[in-house]
Amino acid sequence: RNPELNDTISWNTLISGYAQNGYEEEALKMAVSMEQSGLKWDEHTVAAVLNVLSSLKRLKIGKEVHARVLKNGSHCNKFVSSGIVDVYCKCGNMKYAESVHLLYGFGNLYSTSSMIVGYSSQGKMVEAKRLFDSLSEKNLVVWTAMFLGYLNLRQPDSVLELAREFIAKESNIPDSLVMVSILGACSLQASMEPGK
Image 1 (cartoon, rainbow, N blue to C red):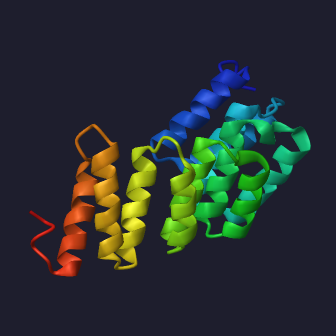
Image 2 (image 1 turned 135 degrees about the horizontal axis):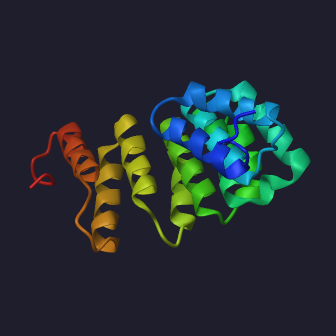
């Protein structure tokens, strides 16, 4: 047992550090080593592991962690429940994502954002827009997901309509990715007038 890694805070810091610097596989190994050293995962560990599994698109292990979370009761933590939703979304399993979101993530901005990104990436824009419209506050992640979803489906009118809404509701200067989406819609539409 490593004397420097004698508590969950140290382990969680190490796991998160590996994950944030692109060493996802090492982060997973550290999470396993943490348990082997006799320390239990807390909600921060679970959230970090779910983030890694989401990045790596590891559905099987994600399901195992989900089962563990249900067993230990940490599914009520908003970061854990949204992490589970994110794993299922990134792995393309929207049915599981919907179930978890409806049970534990409803009203959770992080979970709702993951659902919008998931639906958008799969071309399910009606579902994405329904959730998008339900948000009282929208962050750049959900705006971008909506723009990219419409662009990927080659729906320039929807992009331009969303752009008008974005410009009307957001007081800050539009993000460059949003502007690229708007210009992409204009080029799809082959119309220079909206692009001016």
